[in-house]
Length: 222
Length: 404
Image 1 (cartoon, rainbow over the protein chains, first blue to last red):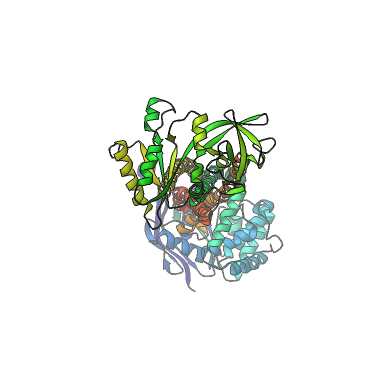
Image 2: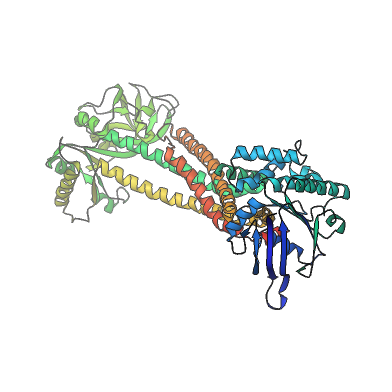
């Protein structure tokens, strides 16, 4: 199987001098296409930094990161944005929807940045919203939706550009256990359809649903 | 693609209605002032141009520079007189010259009193006078050479408005206590001051008002085919010699109708530039308002910017979104400003009509003014939005996402 993500002795430090914190130390990690990986660690363990690096939101100080075989370690901000939009779908704990836009408009947004036409964006947004079970609530604003529904919109948005990888940071952290299970089920379904899923969590019970678990503690990936 | 960005920006502005409105207030006050001032200026210029057109391009106007009060020694010695008129008449290239005496005087009709311009003309010049001043008879006749206590009145005297009961042909009016019979009415000129004036014999006027040989204005008509500017210079030379004055120290001015119009245009231009300059300060303040609003907006939407970047927005995408938003603030301000400006211009026209009773001031709104105002307001918005938009586009996605 092809490699979706490869981290090769990656490190990242925040701050300078005495206050400098090495958030990720010599991380080595390989994620194959179609994997369902859980990254588990307590808060402050460096898992958010790891997610930022995998998600091309940040660049490492040393080592290299390959996304779909592409080295992103030395990309410019513009190239990073483009790669991020095309190959990765983000799902956040806080949902991170844009409050002024409807569910459908939120889903259409990533496609706008990839240059799709209005017609293509509209069709595709409706398709993925139906896929996550929100075909009937497309024109509602995030404020009018429940937490579970908002997270579904976020997942639909992550699917908009049909990326190979979905990166979910505590996707059930703000949901009740029943809704959380539904969202997890949705992610498992997507994995069955061939998406590579990476969940970052501190919750062991969620991690158990993954095919593979890696632990991170004090910046060290095990 | 760009239309989608406009859409996105529009939603954001609508979402913050009050703030957006307060921000564009600064722009639309400035734009409204500029549009109104320019339209009034344009209207003023074209109506004056029309008056000069009536006067004709082959005329040379000679008048005293004297600003001294009438009757004062300095004033008196500088006045033009009948002898100056003779000099002009003899100048080569001059077809004819007409001298007019203007004074304000008290007119009594029935039991009412009014102050109006009395023009003293030489009835023997009647044909030439008509030609020179472009006054046309509406009713009755012009003054005849042997007319003494006869008057020709402006259109304003018979149209109502000036007198409670309009003057009519054959009626008697009193000018400075002397009775005159109305023998003619002039066509309306559009200029209310002209329309309220009364023409009488210059000789009689000098007599009843105790004027010497003074002439307020001399109108010379140039022989056909001659250059009015050249003749004007020749007249000035002859008058300098006759009055024994040095070049550059003349106590009189000689201007062709066109030069007179140009000097009016210059004065109007300066006046407009000053007024528009003041209005431009409002636009500058409006621009600063947009900048302030955009900085606040960038700060408030830091997290949103982070989200957009995480789903693939490039720096240039973020820059466009914020620039267009700022530009829209300017443009919407401009649209409202243009509408208010047109309203103000029309209002000025209506007030002028009410006050002067004539349609002399016709404000105009040329396409370049409207389009220019809109483009300018959009540009003001964009320029003001540049720094905030650059700041927004340079935010680091990781830090922006963490922003609460």
